[in-house]
Image 1 (cartoon, rainbow, N blue to C red):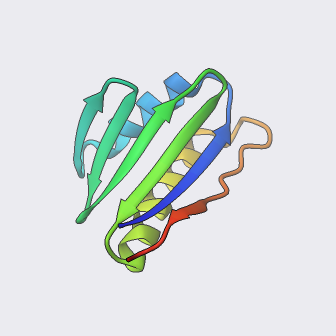
Image 2 (tube, rainbow, N blue to C red; image 1 turned 60 degrees about the horizontal axis):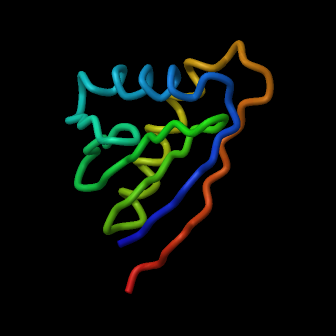
Length: 99
């Protein structure tokens, strides 16, 4: 399983996390979990997890192509909602490699 993670410094992370999950829910299955939302994108999974002052995004997939797709979907849509916020950037870090 390939995994990539982004910790996004953002004001009101719960608000933006919920907005992101709700926006994507019309195209993919979204499950509310204890600490956020799981989005079933293709054959992979995107997680959106609000923290105190950050929004954690996690992408998981079997193939590098699907991993990139999930990262693109999460990142692109979040940035659409935060255009008026100063300095919102998303930097992904790979946290595992295929075995």
